[in-house]
Length: 117
Image 1 (tube, rainbow, N blue to C red):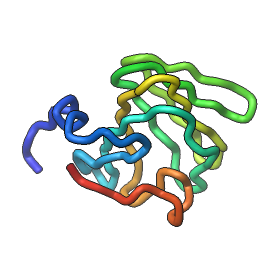
Image 2: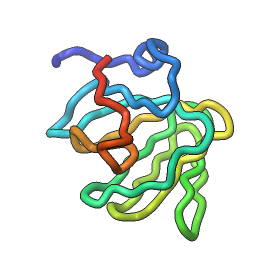
Image 3: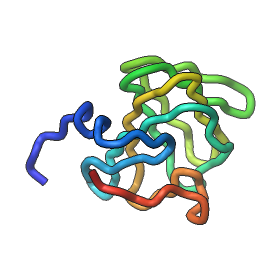
Image 4: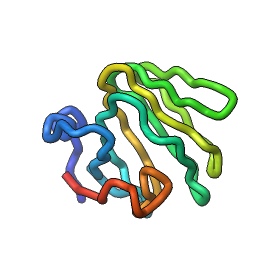
Protein backbone atom coordinates (compact mmCIF):
# COMPACT_ATOMS: atom_id res chain seq x y z
CA UNK A 1 0.00 0.00 0.00
CA UNK A 2 1.58 3.23 -1.13
CA UNK A 3 -1.29 5.57 -0.29
CA UNK A 4 -1.78 8.00 2.51
CA UNK A 5 -4.42 7.13 5.09
CA UNK A 6 -6.82 9.77 6.36
CA UNK A 7 -7.87 8.61 9.83
CA UNK A 8 -10.93 10.89 10.01
CA UNK A 9 -12.22 9.48 6.71
CA UNK A 10 -11.67 5.93 7.93
CA UNK A 11 -13.44 6.63 11.26
CA UNK A 12 -16.41 8.12 9.37
CA UNK A 13 -16.99 4.77 7.60
CA UNK A 14 -18.35 2.93 10.66
CA UNK A 15 -20.30 3.56 13.85
CA UNK A 16 -19.97 0.37 15.92
CA UNK A 17 -18.01 0.46 19.16
CA UNK A 18 -15.27 -1.94 20.28
CA UNK A 19 -14.69 -3.22 16.74
CA UNK A 20 -11.22 -2.13 15.54
CA UNK A 21 -10.73 -1.66 11.80
CA UNK A 22 -7.35 -2.17 10.14
CA UNK A 23 -6.30 0.82 8.02
CA UNK A 24 -2.69 -0.19 7.27
CA UNK A 25 -0.07 -2.83 7.99
CA UNK A 26 3.44 -2.14 9.29
CA UNK A 27 6.15 -4.78 9.83
CA UNK A 28 3.68 -7.53 10.72
CA UNK A 29 1.47 -5.21 12.78
CA UNK A 30 -2.02 -3.90 12.15
CA UNK A 31 -2.56 -0.16 12.45
CA UNK A 32 -6.21 0.17 13.44
CA UNK A 33 -8.80 2.76 14.31
CA UNK A 34 -11.64 2.10 16.72
CA UNK A 35 -14.57 3.85 18.34
CA UNK A 36 -15.09 3.11 22.01
CA UNK A 37 -17.94 3.89 24.37
CA UNK A 38 -18.77 2.30 27.70
CA UNK A 39 -16.72 -0.32 29.54
CA UNK A 40 -14.76 -3.07 27.82
CA UNK A 41 -14.03 -6.45 29.39
CA UNK A 42 -11.06 -7.00 31.72
CA UNK A 43 -8.43 -8.83 29.68
CA UNK A 44 -4.72 -9.23 29.03
CA UNK A 45 -2.48 -10.15 26.12
CA UNK A 46 0.07 -12.76 27.13
CA UNK A 47 2.39 -12.32 24.15
CA UNK A 48 2.23 -8.63 23.25
CA UNK A 49 1.98 -5.11 24.61
CA UNK A 50 -1.22 -3.11 23.92
CA UNK A 51 -0.78 0.35 22.32
CA UNK A 52 -3.49 3.03 22.72
CA UNK A 53 -3.33 6.53 21.15
CA UNK A 54 -6.38 8.75 21.75
CA UNK A 55 -7.38 10.78 18.69
CA UNK A 56 -10.62 12.23 20.09
CA UNK A 57 -12.30 12.13 23.50
CA UNK A 58 -11.08 10.92 26.89
CA UNK A 59 -10.22 7.33 27.75
CA UNK A 60 -9.48 5.67 31.07
CA UNK A 61 -7.30 2.57 31.07
CA UNK A 62 -8.10 0.71 34.28
CA UNK A 63 -5.33 -1.47 35.68
CA UNK A 64 -5.55 -3.71 38.76
CA UNK A 65 -4.01 -1.00 40.95
CA UNK A 66 -4.17 2.20 38.87
CA UNK A 67 -6.19 4.28 36.40
CA UNK A 68 -4.53 6.00 33.45
CA UNK A 69 -6.43 9.01 32.07
CA UNK A 70 -5.77 9.84 28.40
CA UNK A 71 -6.90 12.76 26.25
CA UNK A 72 -6.39 13.62 22.58
CA UNK A 73 -2.79 13.18 21.49
CA UNK A 74 -1.86 11.05 24.50
CA UNK A 75 -0.83 7.41 24.36
CA UNK A 76 -0.28 4.57 26.76
CA UNK A 77 1.24 1.11 26.34
CA UNK A 78 -0.07 -1.72 28.52
CA UNK A 79 2.75 -4.18 29.10
CA UNK A 80 2.16 -7.77 27.95
CA UNK A 81 0.40 -9.93 30.50
CA UNK A 82 -1.03 -6.98 32.47
CA UNK A 83 -4.79 -7.16 32.98
CA UNK A 84 -6.56 -3.97 31.87
CA UNK A 85 -9.92 -2.53 30.85
CA UNK A 86 -10.52 0.52 28.65
CA UNK A 87 -13.45 2.72 29.75
CA UNK A 88 -14.95 5.57 27.72
CA UNK A 89 -17.76 7.60 29.31
CA UNK A 90 -18.36 9.29 25.94
CA UNK A 91 -17.32 8.16 22.47
CA UNK A 92 -13.56 7.97 21.98
CA UNK A 93 -11.68 7.64 18.70
CA UNK A 94 -8.52 5.61 19.04
CA UNK A 95 -5.48 4.46 17.08
CA UNK A 96 -4.23 0.98 17.97
CA UNK A 97 -1.11 -0.87 16.86
CA UNK A 98 -0.87 -4.62 17.47
CA UNK A 99 0.76 -7.64 15.87
CA UNK A 100 -1.54 -8.86 13.09
CA UNK A 101 -4.13 -11.29 14.40
CA UNK A 102 -3.99 -10.20 18.05
CA UNK A 103 -7.48 -10.73 19.56
CA UNK A 104 -8.78 -7.47 21.04
CA UNK A 105 -10.25 -9.31 24.04
CA UNK A 106 -7.16 -11.44 24.59
CA UNK A 107 -9.24 -14.49 23.57
CA UNK A 108 -9.82 -15.53 19.95
CA UNK A 109 -13.29 -16.91 20.81
CA UNK A 110 -14.66 -13.52 21.90
CA UNK A 111 -12.56 -11.14 19.78
CA UNK A 112 -13.79 -8.85 17.03
CA UNK A 113 -13.03 -10.20 13.56
CA UNK A 114 -10.17 -8.55 11.67
CA UNK A 115 -11.61 -6.12 9.14
CA UNK A 116 -9.82 -3.86 6.65
CA UNK A 117 -11.34 -0.52 5.67
